[in-house]
Image (cartoon, rainbow, N blue to C red; front, side, top):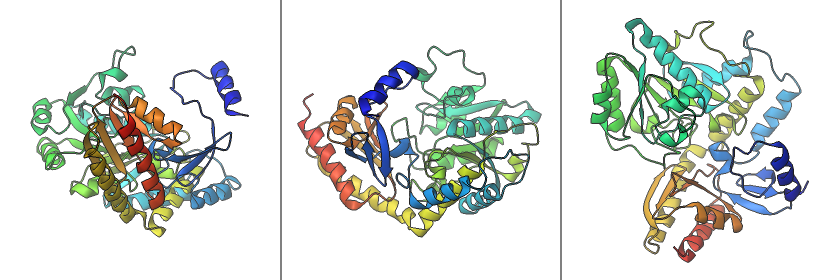
Length: 396
């Protein structure tokens, strides 16, 4: 089908709950992707952050092809070697005395974390969870309520009881929200959808101390930051703060749907049979893909690559900032890059698309890049060249 034919079929049969670009993508390799007409695009936002090791990473493709011919799915009433090996791999790389639960997405992982926090708080009558303004935790009702952005709550209320919000980075505000009914703090160590917001120095450490003081669980939503995005396996390892649980998805399985919760054993033991489940969670294909992702990151030495990519983007954008009044602030950690603009970023994204570059705008005016860890140097510079041209030529 041509792009026009695919778009027409979508308009007739697919619910229009997404804003879609007028392009039909059919093939990808590394940091490039092609449309139905054979036009190639440089992708600096591959898979909405899921394709951390690029499109169709060879080890993942080979592992999935092999597994799909052996066994596609059995339920979690049976033991499966790939799931056991993946849990072992994640726990060992986290350094936590933890165990894993597997699901299919980030919102499911956060739902599991919310339930676990309440199960641990229940004996003392605790059920309230503190989350942060501008956070994003998912679209199902628990995760949606945890999301501290009113725009996502509009029209679908009432939200669930038991969630309160503090400004990200404000330790005193979080402390004032703690009551005898509080059971946990849930936070993205780096806010992604909220605009690539980095935590102030001492903030995450302060939350750890606050949780220790009041006997609360500290849960890090690492759906976007996990699996090496920030240069360490998990973002918390950059800050020297040990959470009680972390949630994962997006890049976990190299583009295959997979989510997970890692929780310290003293908390994880509350998830006894009957308390929680996910029919497809931890299926063989997803776990094999995740193991191949771990192998790729290690064998291709991609964790240190994150710092090099970060420095290259920072250098280019700081130089652009000296030439373009549109750039207000630059926020970078690993391959999480945010460029705060003085204008709405939508026309910038649209103009880059015309030049065959895929980027994202979040929070209205923040250009967000989540490039692959194996982004080639020449592709990085080519992408920056396009962004620079668009920004310098934009007429506000």
